[in-house]
Amino acid sequence: MNEENITTGQVVLETIKTILIVGFFAILIRTFLLQPFIVEGRSMEPNFANNDYLLIDKLSYRLREPARGEIIVFRYPKDTRQNYIKRVIGLPGETVMIEGNQIQVFSSSDTTGKPLHETYLPADTVTSVFGSDKKLSITLQADEYFVLGDNRDASSDSRSFGAVKKGLILGKTLFRLFPLGTIHVFAHEPDPLSS
Image 1 (spheres, rainbow, N blue to C red):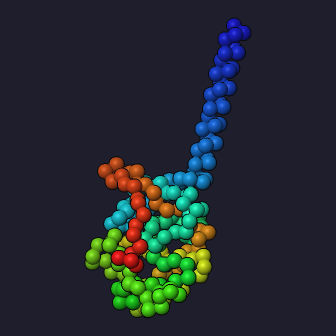
Image 2 (image 1 turned 180 degrees about the vertical axis):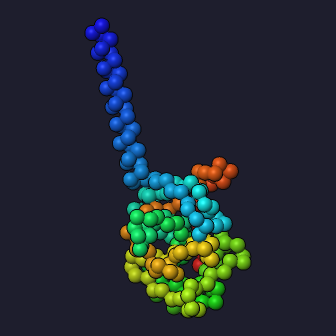
Image 3 (image 1 turned 180 degrees about the horizontal axis):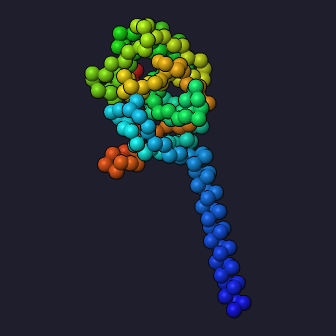
């Protein structure tokens, strides 16, 4: 009887230890490596749909800077309790100008500007400026990024809320896990300025 109690106690203790170890590693993975994210809304259509279930890579940007064309998840600058998903268009130190459905990027090494060639979007995509202005020009600081949603007509992005500071970026999109028919691994996109 006493041996059964000890054996049962040991099993319970081992089970608790296993649960704690698994929980500890799950917290480590979520904090430093991967985070789940569910797309809400239409701002990234046609590349991402409402309710797509994604895994976000949180480690890469601890080792390198975000690159143009990458899809990032970040805390909304005006309410950091909300997370947004958008595409990186402008990098720190650059000036992004939108005028007449054309996006141009200027840098200290290229003051004449280069047009953005967004092959990941449908050919008929229109990038306009919100409000009465027909032109938008934003110069990014050393820790700022200009982001746009792929569905330009239905996206709240840097055209409305301005640049995103690096400290607000949670990570880059790594996998789409659901729906099952759309499982996808997101590889590095070529820089749309070099196309």
